[in-house]
Image 1 (cartoon, rainbow, N blue to C red):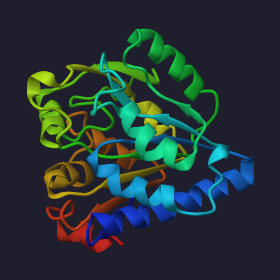
Image 2 (cartoon, one colour; image 1 turned 135 degrees about the vertical axis):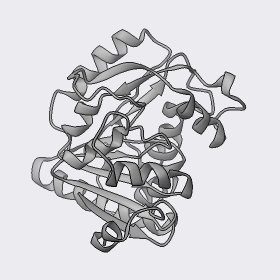
Image 3 (cartoon, rainbow, N blue to C red; image 1 turned 30 degrees about the vertical axis):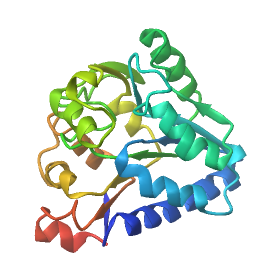
Image 4 (tube, helix red, strand yellow; image 1 turned 90 degrees about the horizontal axis):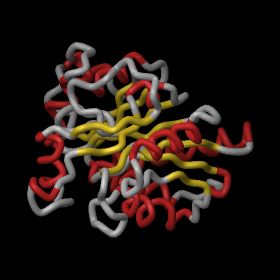
Length: 251
């Protein structure tokens, strides 16, 4: 695992976007297309803004999947991840080949159909974050580290749901759905490369647990340390609790 620490979220987003663009251009040049997994949430604002503005990416050759969506939430709701991606990624790039998780349909069928499309070919790069409770996608602790199912129907814990209120996506806890469709841990790990983009002080404890603690389902994103090609992008706030050895190894 490679860790890169930047001054602030803007610099982090720009650096991650430049690196991501290079991966996409290389994949398109070598194989004619790039397959990606996109994350959502407040942590990805700067990264997606920077990535969609960079030149030289043939977005018509990019196929996109995303990590998760709430069960039962309409696409018109401000917290919908489909809405998020349409507004912040798909429309700005003109991307036409994308697979959005429809939380308004039968979730079992959505898991099956989207998973089959995802597993049709390897994924070149996954863009992910880390939740305040250490979650990876919506795999809250204790996460399932063993299932090979590409997508799961998961129950969201209270800490995860509180994070969504704290970020302003919902008015109160009662409004946050209790279930979501999430890409599984093992499916994320099948990606050739993983970029983990984590700004903000409120993520510092989770970052420390996942980068320095035990690799355990109670800190789901800690599993990223088992992958051969992961880059973690932090700002000074999210890296503020890391020990000196970790900081010294970071770029």
